[in-house]
Length: 106
Image 1: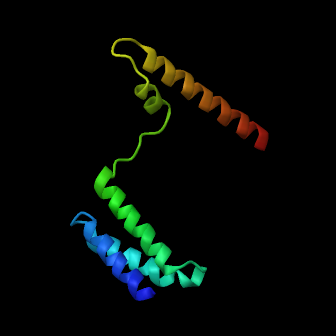
Image 2: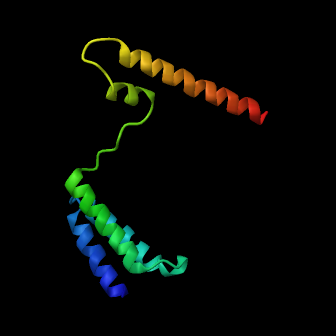
């Protein structure tokens, strides 16, 4: 079964961009080899590598923006201050939560 998993990982790494192929192949093969130590099927690790490679290739590797400003910009209107106001409110809420958390630890 490990041979099949290793072949699947090699095929998945071939889908990666040229600059990342060798690194991904090495990492994923090491994950397949170490899967038995943590009682995980090598084939499930290889399948996950294949899904990752395929999804990255078809959808791109863009990371979704996070944080108050990203949320505000996602819900912006063409003209207006709504994104800035929303970002400020969300940032203040985040800071208030942090203050409450730190006050509770002390």
